[in-house]
Length: 246
Length: 316
Image (cartoon, rainbow over all chains, first blue to last red; front, side):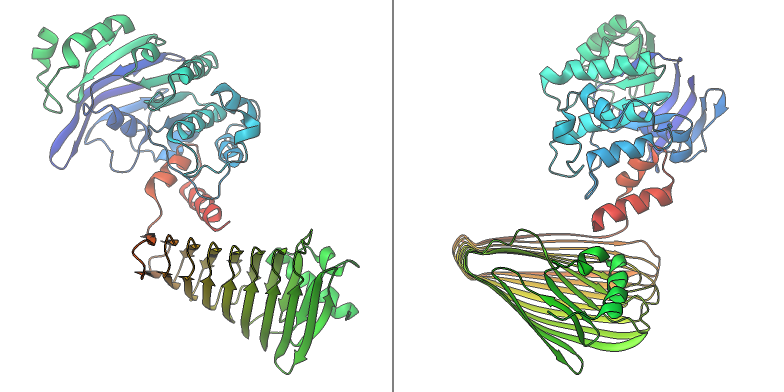
């Protein structure tokens, strides 16, 4: 479904991503593990096509189509979306309206905004009329973001640390959302540090120093990550052979 | 009670773009005041609410009194308009809200055909001890931008009182706006001044909000939201003065430019004359928030649709 071929990205003369090759299959949950500063969020931004994240080399294919040069909204209308780790806040926009916006290009059918909220563990009667502004806590805002992704019914959902700042009791809701997306036919590219969340993946990749080192079974990748990447000092200056060789 | 049939119907229709329900203005139990140019078309009080209106050569004088302790259940409607292309309307008003009273006003000002219209509003407002007054004013200025709006208000909020106002000018072209509100707060009084304007074409907007926190524990918020498009020029002056112990004040200003030739400035002024008072301010001026736009475009909205959603939300 999604293929990244030799993606390179530099910022301020520094390589952030280089030679990234990644494949995400239809309806697959694919987690990306990597320490802070290794380029995980940058990878998400490149796939979504955010401004300032245009690759200097490489191509992105989505369902066989080259989308490397498409703007964000055109990628979104092809079914790609992104849930930010720190989502934007909107003054004067209610949660109900925010979720409806996500449904605008997906036929406005099921699931309803209320169902999407229930799925992320928020009571619709308490949240639909709330504003998507600074009155929501960080955790609440992230859950509304996930509800918005559900409402959009994407083909590929990129979730950038959806568990960050979430109450441990609510982690199950996040896992449930990821499974629901997959059951509904969406591929999920999951960026997380949380091994319990990463365990829902069908496959996983290890990102270190701006490049994908390994892809495979999530448990094996998690072990690889713990043994070779957690203490890795090669942030954005990878010595792939050293890490892989270790 | 004054009532002028066809003129009133015409005015009520003109109020619709300013957010008014024409039926409310025509309703037999309407409570409030309706002035077309210098003609008072309706003036009707209620139990505990007295409205005295007087026509002048250029507009009207109005004295609105709410008796102490009275809590009016619904909003009081105030409608002001100039329907011809040209004209001057000067409204001199006095509001006296008795101790412990509670009242809310919905004011609608409409100038749908204006090419050369001046609308001057001078208000003196007293909110008595423990009283609460909410005042929401919505304008509609037509597409020509031929309106000068000069609202000036002096508000006094007595001990434990609350005054909250919203000035909204979003539909049509704003024209020239010079808003100048000053509020003086006694002990434990609260005041929120909120202005929202969408400037287009050659509109010129100046919003000046001043809050004097004269009593202990007084709290004030001066909030402004302006979107300046095309060649609009906007300026916001938010001033809060802390004159008493434990007074708290905040100036909150956002001005967004959506046109390459639009201009904006903000001048927050905070002055503390008592070391136990605390004042803060925040201002954001310039382009749209990139992350907001990208979040919405990542849901499939075009950039233009995303800008519209952000602007409408902010000015709501």
